[in-house]
Amino acid sequence: MRNTNRNPSRNGMKSTKKVKRVIDGYIDYKDTKQLQKFLTDQGKIIPRRITGLSAKQHRELVTAIKRARHLAILPYISEAVK
Image: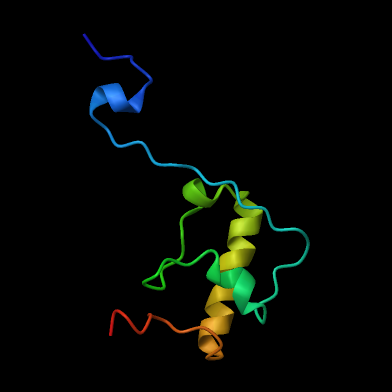
């Protein structure tokens, strides 16, 4: 019989804490402080399921981060990883 328990801690699965981050208005690629909130300490983009953004907002965010990286406003990887 299949385990239908919905509580992840009882199944032995890790439960991730979902943080609700909200972006009001336009996501600007020049606003590095706002973009840094959606990057890990290694420089990776935090997934949508963790940030709590809508799909449209996350697509705009990823485009802005990639544009800022291309223009050397944001680093591709952090200094700690190098």
